[in-house]
Each structure stands twice: as C-alpha cells, then as structure tokens.
Image (cartoon, rainbow, N blue to C red; front, top):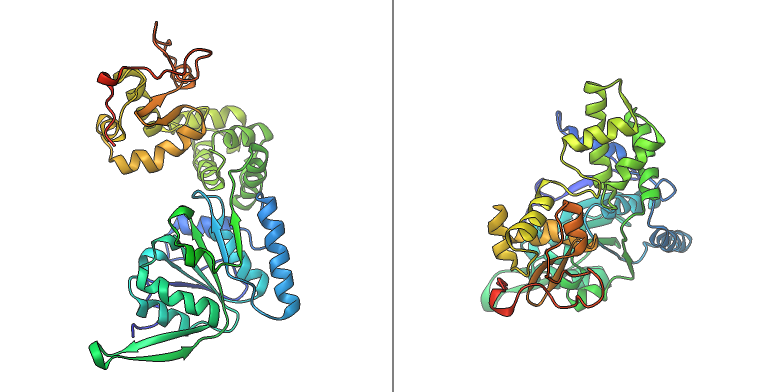
Length: 371
C-alpha cells in the first residue's frame, strides 16, 4: 500500500480552519487563503446552492452524523473549493484535499481513506479525472465506509476488507458530463454553480478590498466587476493588479479612472476580453471573414494549441454572444464585428445581424471546418 498522504498527493486543512500555512514567498497562495470565506454567512453569491447546503449541514448536525456526499459542478473560479472548505469549517472537522489526476492507483485512495478521522471531509478536485480503478474502490467507500485492499497478484491475490471512518466526500468538477453514472448517483447533494451577477461581484470586491487594505470606490468596484466575466477568481485577480497600479501610478485609491487605466494597461477590455480572446476574434473576423472556420485552423492562426482556444477562450466568447459554434465551424456574430470596430461585410450574411441572416457566411466550398 502506498504511504499515506504523500505531500504532492494531498493537503490537509486543520479542523474548522479554512486557511493553510503557505510556504514562504508564495504570495498568490497567501492572498487566495486570506480572501476565502470561512463560513456560509461570509460566502457571497450562489444563493440557491448556499441555502440548500445550509439545510444539508444543519440536518446532519442535528442527527449527529456526517452529511451526505456533495458534488459541486460548474466553471472554474466560482467557489467550489471555498465551499468545500466551508463545509469542513461548519462541521468543525478536518478537510483533506487532493485532485482526481493525482489519484492514479486504487492504493493511493485506500491509503487516504484509511487515514480519515470520523466525520472528516475529503475534497477531490476535478473528480471526473480520477483513475477508473480508484473510482471503483470509491463506490464501496462512499456507500459502506469500507474498502477492499488487494494483497498479492495473480491467483494468490487476497482481498482484505478494511473498515474506514464515516466521512463526507466533496467532489468538484468543471465537466459534470464526464462523470460516470454510478459515481454521480452516489452523491446525496449536487450543487450547480452559476456565474455571478455584477452586483454580486461588487460585494466580493468590496470584501476583498477591505481584507487587502485597498481603498476602493463604488465606481472603481463596478468597473472591475463589469470586466470580471462573472467569476470571483478573476475579479480578485484584477483587483490585485489594479491595486498595484494605484499604488505605483496614483495615490493608492482605486477610482473609476484608475481602474480603467490599470485594466487598459493589462489588456482587459470593456467586456473582460484579454489579449488572447481578442486575437481569436480578430483572426476569425479579419483573416477568415467571420467564418465558418475550424478550431484547429483558428488555433494555428493565433499561435496557440486547439485545446487552449477551445477550453480557455471559447466558453466566454460564446456566452458573451461574440462567437457561435456550428456544425460547419466557428462563426463570428454581429456583436463580434461591432466590438472589434470592424464594419460588417457588404452583401454577406452575419450571424445575428437581423432578419434573413440565418445562412452562415461562406459557401460549403469555402468552409475551413476541421473537426
């Protein structure tokens, strides 16, 4: 059996504590730990998930038993890890953290489970990427709080049943559709995280500014929130960069003008698009006439990997209504042309340009789609 809790595999948070002691000089980790909420009362946004989770935790406390296993799904940066730490804090138990890709063998998972204390929380980030042998071992652990450890190989192999303490598994995933049915069905509570509204992001920024000692005006907060893609993690990151600009180039006070100047310096435009996002749109509009064009061709045009374009850029561009995925390839919408300041093509159909424009630009012979 693997040595329990090798450092690269798992991190442990103390009982009821949502912070971890970072290594010296790791500023990013210090800031992230400081800004994380420690209770459901401090957690901003996700009202439906917060209310549902509060009921689950209160019911478990009254019964004196660990709550059902929890699955949190949604895009990155919306607070899944924070909620996992809050669950441990609300229950007054330790939270042990690992990730799906780190669990390569069932023995790794068995070692972790055997070291859990009664009522502890095991948080597995990106749980959809857990190895299949480990996932199958997890089924029995979640239902019966027992694992079978196989000793030996071949015909002489023996399965030794190992009882484990009752625990709560909190799984987080950005790709809920990749979870297998048997694993998804074993979670008693599933919370779907949604993107934040600008008003909610302003609350997040105001709280973070108070913790960081930043003087943030209402106009400055609104400007940063409007460019944060509905994501608290991005909002906090932009706040730290605007703080740097305010301290070096201004009087330290984050006003509307300071926020606008700082975000322009860091290539974040009015919609929250960064340099790579705009490069993708520029290539689609200027080089390929608005599309349709395949993601591989588009990635070559901007000098990035297709996976980067598809997983990093496209989700927000599609959600912002600037890009559409079609069977024939990626297509720029009318909003993309207008946002980049380019005139709409004469005599050509543009997606979203009004009545009679359902036909995509380009003929089938011109389609550059490469699946």
